[in-house]
Amino acid sequence: MIPPRARAAIALALGDRRTIGLGLLLIGIGVVGKLALLGYANIETVFVASLLAGSVLGRAWTVLVPLSVLGILQPFLWGTEYPGYGLEAIAGITFFVVTGFVFVALAGRRMRGRVLARVRSVALLTTLSIPLTVAYDLWTDVGDWYFLFRPAGIDFVTVLTWQLPFTLYHLLSSLIFVPLVGSSFLVLHEHLAAARHARSEPNPAEPGERSD
Image 1 (cartoon, rainbow, N blue to C red):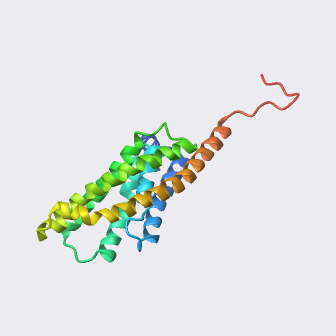
Image 2 (image 1 turned 45 degrees about the vertical axis):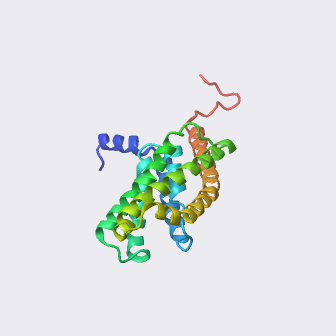
Image 3 (image 1 turned 180 degrees about the vertical axis):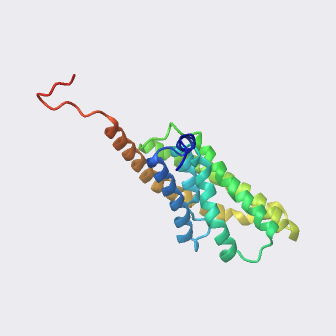
């Protein structure tokens, strides 16, 4: 049995059952979407899951969602999609990928309170996703260059040139999934919040019944 103090700490970090369910949903979106789209370069759902974790859920989910998604995905990807790399390269590039998505979630966290189930909120997140996608790709390019291409004598400018079409794909991914997943998630979030609020309100007195 969980002690009351520990239960209170968990509730403070993760929120109520509704919030926990939404957090787990975002983790599922990040993992399943990425695995389903493995054949498409830089088309993924980890970005939108991280952005929504920070901008909508907040709390520990800001960091927990990207860490959980990548904790599931990275061992699988290194073992199947990108085999043959040394431990140093794997650890180094993973660091840049993880910190990149955590940065996306933290940037989304700054929008929390301004994001509601409205068209302008989805537009705000979509607009924010453009510079964040470019920043994420530049950050991970540093890791790719340092751990993979620098030892081969390839300069950073060349790596950036190679990355350009993949960044365009990544921008396309963000422009598709941020409004698509974001609008659906925001509607679900607001629906659950409204349902919880309705349950917490006292029932009005029946006609003819005293209310005192």
